[in-house]
Length: 386
Image (cartoon, rainbow, N blue to C red; front, side, top):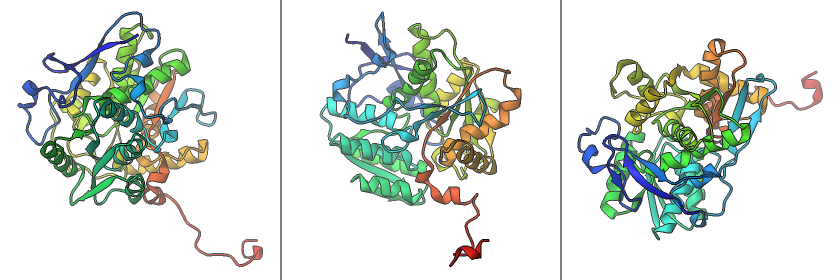
């Protein structure tokens, strides 16, 4: 069954065809200043009935997807963390991160419309993800990456054959330069939030969680920087509600690092203020959350929550996850567990929480090293330690 899909502006409701060159609503984006989140983000809406499988709710046909293992990731039971916690383990995706969910949809779109090159900015994970998925799909990828991005993520992208351009500045600078490059050359941008498919691809974890549980969980803890994964999870559960697969929206908790908490701050104050992000969790470190307005709208309309965690709490959570479950998460991914620990005492007894674990710790061993004590001396015989 072919499903009809269109883009609809999340602010003014104007509708557009899903085709190359359509990214933000042209009427709404003109109101935007460079130092604030994107306006006129487009949602994918579906016109159909009798949907038997929510995975049908994607705007690109399956035949265009690269044949690679993305999604269908484990929902891990965690005996040592308690019966009320499950880990959605996206470290097992092709490139080790949740970002593959968006990348594979963008790659499928490019293949459908015979586009050969994709451009993006990234702090690391989206870039290595698009590079790997692009390689599998026969697509050229040009990546704008802050020069201080974790080296492992840069190595990943280079290994996949991406054209890596290092930027003297942070993610926001890389974003602006990548946009200028893609517009100048007329190329497809995968930039988070700017390309509507990034939100749409990231909704699929919600579909899987409900299929794996047989129902919606009570809470979902989401590591949050620019707000796209958060928005994608909301979109997934909204689609499930719309087509009758679930009866309630779970409580979504956006977990932000103390050094990059723009969405949390805006939910409390009502306005976005540009900040200088500084956190060990590089994957959720942004000065301007590009999906901020849209994410804030979802939180308000669905009565979601935000929580802020310190770098020390993140590193503690990362180490505890590793020791208690065997799952080595990067700092941004471990933030979801740090947020859960902070709110655990006030959650309803017997409720079920799903934590999104969005990237492997092997992507940033320097950050993990900060919380470890390394052996001081090499031994020569067993007698040296007896």
